[in-house]
Length: 386
Ligand code: UGA
Image 1 (cartoon, rainbow, N blue to C red):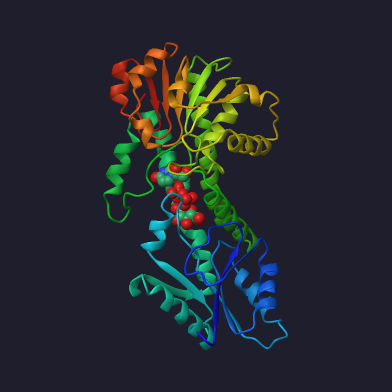
Image 2: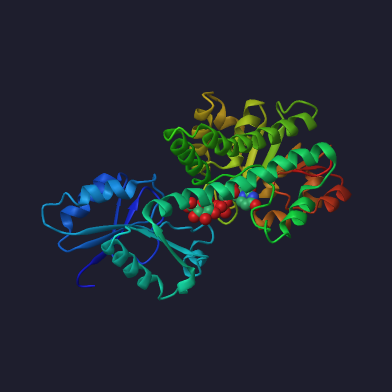
């Protein structure tokens, strides 16, 4: 409008989403705010898009309002809920749009302006308006709840393996209760990605800052359960392979943190590979989208986390051009990303090319286990009776 210029301010390294009229990306919100104040010539609505610590908007507003041009700045929080692999769909058909702003008249007017932009393609009833802090905190809480569901079902997967229950049957049984719902109940080798762990740690820090130690510990447990799930997977692999992986070729199918992306940040696959390398296994990794350089960067990061060094990394990790190459002569296969192509591989051909007994560890429960057993594989899957 004439009165206000609208800017989408990206604080951090997230996506640029939403109706971008001007984009200013900086790593530090305060520097970013100073830059906006410097270049603006009109009253401006500044919209936070990326995930930020709660009350960042307050800091940004204070910096902006120190401008010496007499301009009025309104700060809105409009977190994005795009997921990798479905970002465009999520943008075009969002489940909801969340806009937080000041509770005074000017704040409400700014909210109304951004609402009117979204109303061009999002039904009004899906646009939620809140105060600034609720909006900033909702972003963290949404990711924390999603991650919590994955950790919850993963904790049950361990119990299933111990008791003979089947985690997929449990997901179906509980997910058909509409109060629980079926999504994010897919048991796995562990959640990854750049958001879940970071956002939960942010939440934990926030709770601790306000002296809410029990709340902090509650959310921290979601991450601890995820770490346990990754470690448990590798330990099971080694134990089934007669308690040693030393010198054995292990095919790793999938390195990305989920299918349909080449992103490897915090991927469970890197943690499993790290632990197998430390057991002196020879890993042959295949991922349809991840290049060797990217894998090595992720390994470096993952190894650093454990303060262990691995001088033979280059030798112990081979990247394979196909799943068949990775599996050729292998003692075991670990399926760690749920790529569709892994469901339709010629497993008879793979079995014939492997050392025997041929182990397959399905960390995503995506392959037909009965058919694999029929071929002759020894199959171990997350949360399934063994
Ligand atoms: C997540 C949220 O889903 C988005 O809503 C949010 O906008 C985004 O973070 C963000 O903050 O930027 P994303 O990290 O792309 O999106 O991935 P998800 O689809 O949420 O999956 C995260 C991890 O959980 C993956 O490793 C996935 O394999 C795992 N997962 C997911 C399971 O193990 N089981 C499930 O049932 C679902």
